[in-house]
Image (cartoon, rainbow, N blue to C red; front, side, top):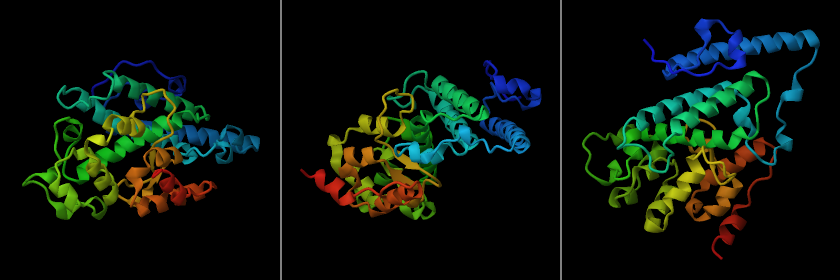
Length: 301
């Protein structure tokens, strides 16, 4: 039997059959199946209503041209967003059960915060009015998901990634590692093999970026970088983050926000793939490309 957690039912879910109510279901596969069913029903109802009234429902849509550069595409499919949150929530739930593997920078109630964000995001989606304020938290959750998927592709585990004392499998002799199965973008550099480092530096699909952080040694502020990338629970509105638009092992699916490029310019030096993919995604939203020569040049002064 799938374990349940007592939660308050959302107004939209009161209209759904009891067998489709996902509230309180902790199993991520079951939650995604029920959420998708409910989202599809909600879409059909809105589509029927729009056809009857002759309106397209654009009043509730988000216009990228008025977004001041925020990644509006993240909210184009809130059902997919809910699936991402459920997936990461399941990971965090397992990690928080083990006091030895819980990320030290995470608050003790991170699982509750994840559930609350998921409920809010799904409720706004079902009501047809996704909020732009959810974008920053969602982008950080997406980076967390990407890190987890890449660490699995590397032959490690989420528990290993979150352990403070963990050392990358590439900088020590680990007989279970099959590098032939590792995506090319994540294949370890010679520096990763020689210098012991924490495995979380291995999850970025940009070899020079990984080397830059390893070479920084103790001058790299791990906590600050972690905050900018994955701390979705922090209410501070920091735009210095990375965005992931697809399979996390593919460099073309990553984007650096302008604030991240300025703040962490030295991390991005020698990473042309990320610079190209960043401007590709910006152009798709009708935004001006970042002037990398100016950003990286200003960082040297």
